Amino acid sequence: MMSSNRAGRPPVANITDALRKAAERAMVAVGYSGMSVDGLVTEAGTTRPAFYRRYPSLAHLVFEVIRDQFGQGQPVDAGSLRDDLLTLQRADITMFASPLIHKNLPGLLEVMSVNESIGKLYHDEFVAPRRANVARILDLAAQRGEVDPSRVDVDLICDVLVGPILSRTLLPIQAGLNDRLARDLVEIVLQMVQADKVTPSR
Image (cartoon, rainbow, N blue to C red):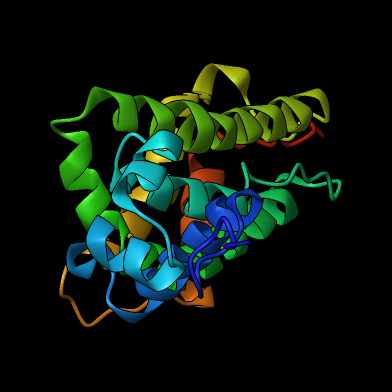
């Protein structure tokens, strides 16, 4: 009796896993701009129809790999706003320095400009949870009396924290992603939101 699978082709149950592994290797090696569905299905030992039964586009698969690798940001509560923000910033620096991000995010952002479904996925499953995490940290800091709530603009603070990291990821500049950047951005935010210390009257 002939086998239902051609030699070298993974069983149906493993096709998704084979595609994901092939995508991750290509994302690190050549980045999104160098990838193709034909290349992935050849490496995974499957077919274009099998790919499109699982993913609407190459960008959806690439985003899935990034999302599953980096999640939605871990909740932190170290007891101080500075420590909490620094923990988040260091995690973001590590994430954006990864080839999975810096070799693929430029191409994904270009796709998002014309593909609303990818843009929505990126916002809902990547950006929004991270911004909610920052909002939660700021709320905890307000409860501890560390910040002046009237100075807290969550969207602006998130932009301050992430904007320079994105700039250094996407633009061909010499400045790198390092711990000093993480610390400097945290200090900028602290200056924006910290409550004024009242000197006791004598």
